[in-house]
Image (cartoon, rainbow, N blue to C red; front, side, top):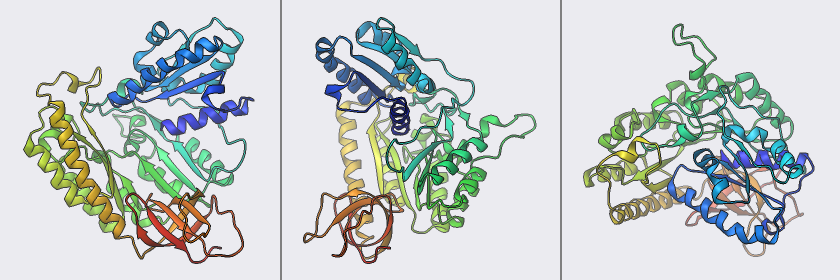
Length: 441
C-alpha cells in the first residue's frame, strides 16, 4: 500500500512539473513511512538524522514525513527536526501536492495534514509521464475495524472506509485502457470490503468483496488479477470459489496466519482458530489445487510458550507455505498487547525466529524445486542480471507471484518488457526460478 501511495505522489508531482531525482540533488524529500513494527519506525528517525548535514548545506531543503509514523508522531517531528516542514497521515495524501507547492511559495510555513476522513479519501488520478504501467494497484478500502491486539493500523490509518464500487471499476477500466495487464486490489482487509457501508438494521448495502472481485475479474482486456491483504475470519466461500471460476485471478493468495496456536490467536484477538484456517486452505486447494499460499507470522507474542511455538511450526508444515513474512513481536504504542504480561526475552524470540525461518527456507526451496519442468507465464519487468551462454535474459513474475529469470533463444532482438511470455522452468535457485522461452509471440 505504501508503494502505491508513493507511486501516486510521484506521478502527481511529475504531472505538476516536478522531477524525481537523486536524494543528494533534491530540493524536496518525502519520506513515506510504516509503523506496523518498531524497526521501520526507528529507520525513519535514523534517516531524518542523517539529513541534518544536507539541510545545513541547503537551508531551503524541504523535508516531508508521511504515512503511519507521521500519523502516530504528528507535529512532534517539527520540534525535533527543524527541516521537517510537512507531516501528513494516510488520509492527508491527496492534499500533499498542493501543500508542497504552498511550502515552496512560503519559506517559513509548516503544515500538518493529520485528520481522518469520514469517507474514503479519494484522490485525483495520476499516471506515469512516460511509458505504460503494466502492473497497477487499485485501493478499494482504507483503515481497519479488527483491532488485533498487536496492531497499530486502526490507530494510524483509521476505521474501515470502503471505496464505491463504481469508482473502483472506473479506475480499473482506465488502467486497462492505458495498457495495464495486471491489477492488484489493495486494502488492510479486502475481504471485509463493503461491510462498513451495510445498514446494521436492514442488512442492506453495497455488494461485498466477492461481487466486486467478480466484476473486476470479468473486465475485458484484463490478463491478471490479485488482491491483498486477506483476513482469514472474513475469507468467504464465495471468494474462494472465484479462484476456480476466473482464469484472470492468479493462483496465489497471501493469507496471514500469524500463529498456529489457538491460545495465541485468541490472545491476539484474531477471531479464528487454526482449524478454521486449515479448512480455508483445504477449500482453496480444492478449487485451485496449484495455488501458492504465502503468509505473515509473528514470533514471541506475549505469553507464547514452547508448545505454542511448536504448534506454529507444525501448522507451517501442514500448509506448506511457498513463502512467508516473519517477525519477532514488538510493542506498538496504544495497542492492547503493549500492556500484556508475559513478554519474552529478546534472545528467546530471536532463536525462535531463526528456527521458524530455517523451516520456511526448506518449504520455499521445496516449492521452487517442484516447479522445475513446468510451464508458466511471466509478465516481464526488465532485463535480467543473470545470463545463460550469452543469450538475452529477462526477469519478471509468473502467475504465482514468483520471480523468474529466463533466457531467450537466439533470434531477432526483442523488447519484452510489459509482455506476458511462456516460459519453461529449468532450474530452481535459492529464491527464484530460471527458465527458457521456447516461443515468443
